[in-house]
Length: 214
Image (tube, rainbow, N blue to C red):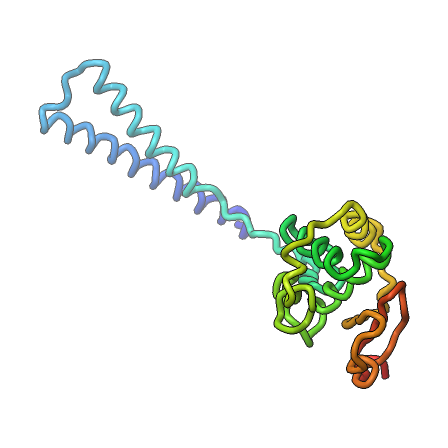
């Protein structure tokens, strides 16, 4: 007898044994109903026995199904979750803060000038040298003068501030060259003495860390 035939024979014997146990179970339950005074010969008792039988045979069918080997499909390893670098995903509250800092720092600049201020904030968020969120970067002590002198609280973004946001988020515009700092013309020489100058746009001069420029 082949191995396959033996397997079929053993499977058949297993089914017979379990079915026999099922009949015994149903009979036993039936006798239990009778002993307890529950068997009245009425339709309700017949329905109850049928229900017990259906439950029992359903369990048997599940138990006697031949086991199937689970197919293990190799899948590509999930991509490493992207950090915030390059992400343009922020909520409405963060968007409002970005538009507000653009208004506070660059009200007299054009749309690109406002966008560059926003990008400095975002570059800081994406940098290991600064805080990890837009609010933390904006409200970090002694970083943006309008936050310190109260102007930030008084201004409301105009249409160009939101156009600057759209320019960055939707059009992926970024001419910041990775700038982490900016200053207005005529301010102190700290930036020029300690940072690497990148470019000028309007009345703002943009800088990065000297080691990042090397």
